[in-house]
Image 1 (cartoon, rainbow, N blue to C red):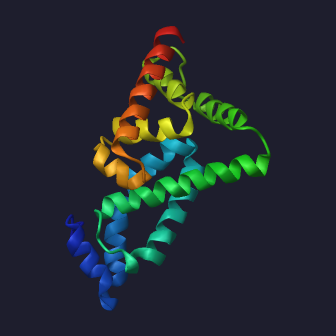
Image 2: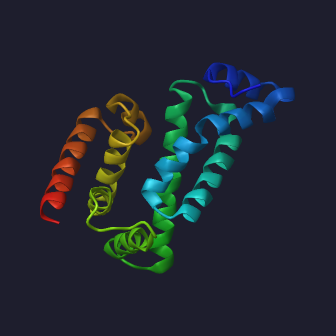
Length: 183
C-alpha cells in the first residue's frame, strides 16, 4: 500500500490504537522531505537538520493526540519545525556564547565548506544573500520562495500578521537583489 495522501485519513489511522504507528509512519513519509528541506535551509548543516527533524517528529508524536485540526496538518508541522529550528539556533548561540553575527558567519562558512560551493554561481550568491538576512526575514523568504507558502498559512505558522509577513518578504527580496547585484 502506497502513502495515503489525505491528512484526514492519516489522522484517523493515527487515532486508532491498533493503527497508530502505521498512521504516524505515513505522516512521516508524507512530510519528512519537505520538513527536512525547510529545516535545512534554516540550520544549513545536513547533520544538524537531521537532529532537528528528529526532535520535530518526537514533538509531533507527543502532541499529535491533541491536534485539533484548527489548521492544516502541514501548517502545524511547519510551525513545530520552524520553532525547533529556532530553538536549535538559539542553543547554538548560547553554547558558543558568540554574537548573532558570529553564528551567521559560521553558517556562511558551513555553506562555503560544501564541496559544490562556487561563489560565482547565482544559486550560491542567493544562498549567501539569504544568510545575510535577519533571522525573521530569512524564515519568511524561505517559506515563501522555496515552499511557496501562502501568507495566510505563514501567518499561522509564525503567529504574525499577513501584512508584517508581506513587508518582511519585500525587505528580504530587496536586500537579496542588492546583494546579488553588488556582491
